[in-house]
Image (cartoon, rainbow, N blue to C red; front, top):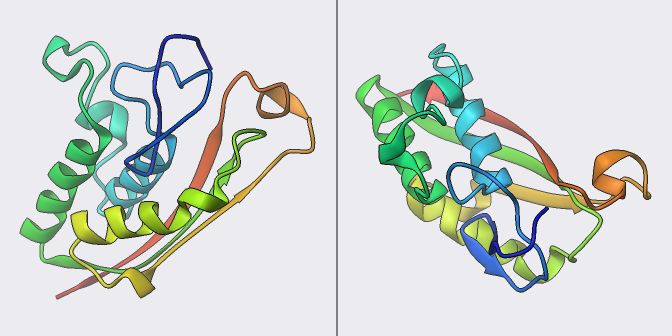
Length: 146
């Protein structure tokens, strides 16, 4: 978490005094979902697909990253079954933004919003998340062949 950056989670710009530092817009939720899709396809990880050494992707929106991986998934003949993700953050509160996050993800992945579940929790002040130094996210994605 650093000053001078917007906090973008799930494609939503959330008002907060700090944002996540990263090569892209550092959307921790979309990165976790993207990485889960890449993993389910057996294509490595987000760092191989979008290396932070590539100046062309500096500042890229994570919505674009997810859309690009979605296209690769479709080209391989798969569709989204469902997604379950958990955001770990001490602050700010995510609950007011979860529905918009779900809508954004469903639109990008061309799936019903009912297939997207996002929840948020704190770490009760433990670790780097609890100290508000950063955030984390875990995501599980079910894909199936069309």
